[in-house]
Amino acid sequence: MTQLPLDLDSILAYLIPGLIAVVGIAFLSPALQKLLGGLRGEHGGSTIILLTLMALVSGMLLSDIRDAVLHPTCSLNLSWISPQPSFRPINRELVNYGKLIGEGRLDAYQEAKRSEQTPYRFHGNTLLAVVFLVTSRIIALCRAGARGTVSQHGRTRGVVAALVLLIVAFAVLYPAFRTRYYNYTHAISAINGS
Image (cartoon, rainbow, N blue to C red; front, side):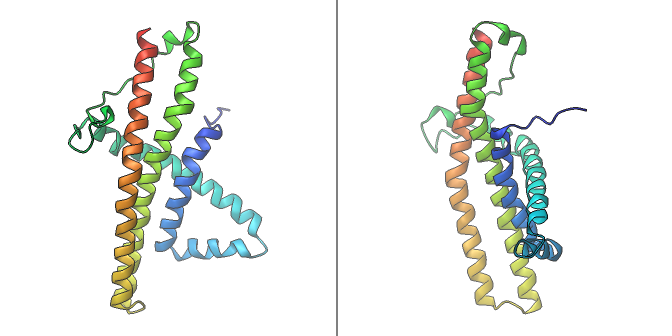
C-alpha cells in the first residue's frame, strides 16, 4: 500500500484552504449546509472527521489548480507593481534529486521545503479557496435574489462585501505567494548548482 505524502506542513497547506473551499461549496449545496449543521448534533464527531477529509481532498485539488493557474503567472513581469525581485519573471526550478546526496544538500532541501514551499502552497491554495468562496457566495446571493428571499439591497451589500474580501485576499496572498515561490526556486537553484 502506498503512503500518502502528508506531513504536518502539507496538512496545513491543504486543510485550511480546503476548509475555506468547503464553506464555499456549502453556499451552493443544501446537503452540505445540513452536514455543517450536524456539528451541533449528536453525530458531531463523525461530522468533524468527514469535514476534515473533505477539506483535505479539496485542499489537494486546490493545489493542483494552483499549479495550473497561479504558477504560470510567475513568469509574468510584474515589476511595475513592486521593485522586489519576486515580481520579475520567475523561472521554475525542478529539484535535481541526484544532487541531494551531497553533504548538507538534503538538509538545505528540507529547510527550503519547510521555510518556503509550505508557505507558498498555503498562500496560493488559500487565494484560490477565497476566489472559490467569493464566487460561490455571489452565485448564492444572485439565486436568492432571483427567488426573492434576499432584498436587492441585501444582495448588493453581500456582493460588495464578497468583492472586498477578494480584493484584500489578492492584495495580501498573491504577493506572499510570489515572494515565497521566488525564495523556494532560488533555494532549489542554489542546491542544484552547488
